[in-house]
Image (cartoon, rainbow, N blue to C red):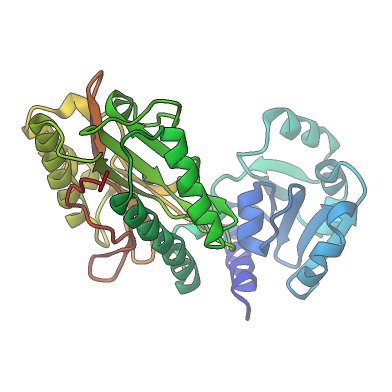
Length: 364
Ligand code: ZN
Ligand code: ZN
């Protein structure tokens, strides 16, 4: 059986537990998870007796192969409306049909008004996301492949020149390397943040010229052919040693990162992993400078469950993929973040992002 058919079957098995007879999957990432479809207009309707993929004419030719997986219906216009109108046909005998929380409120409202007599649309959120939590061997392999290219990028940066270049130029070099290696996309827009820009965790790379001795935070990811994302951050010292206070902050972030990593194992709770890393930074009196969560899951989305942050009750299990990325951000001075992407294994975790975490002073 194909991996995707197995996913569809698992989703169908989950229907009764969610209290619905059928589920209308409209979140395109979930549609991709179930079918591999990567277009912009597709819906999957799952019920005990039927799995249907619905799209429009533009994609008809490209989805022929899906007929081996599930029923395929091609509509001409508003596929959400037409799907709901024909629920008796697509989900025969179903009374309670779940829809996903990502459906825009106005659309959900409109669809409710179009529901055939005897059928009720009810919110059934997170069902497919739940299935996506634990990755298969193929999903882990795809994530590992996307992570491997990041080591090439970081090696180029370490051996090359940062001083005198703009952040935007470095970001373009990163994107070119990833795309020339055959990756169709980045997981997200690269972050190259130097000097005081590094104090903003999600700074956009811009025209600022990188100066000698500045810290440069480089947060990057590649998205592979099958859609799986990688995510890694390293902070470099441009062309020479940074200020000693910055080097001390780097060591503190590294200590926190290693402590956080050490807590990632089956049964660990997301909030507790966050606390383990956060405590290291707080004990040094820098707790206020680490203002975001410790990490997040990755997969077809760059940010997905589980989350490692304050209050998270997510429980880690083998096959989950998460990031561990503490940071220290000193407004007006510098920022440091160190991020690894790891797979939870039976006995602990395996790091996918292998580039050194010793502070690297770039060649120039
Ligand atoms: Zn990242
Ligand atoms: Zn991340």
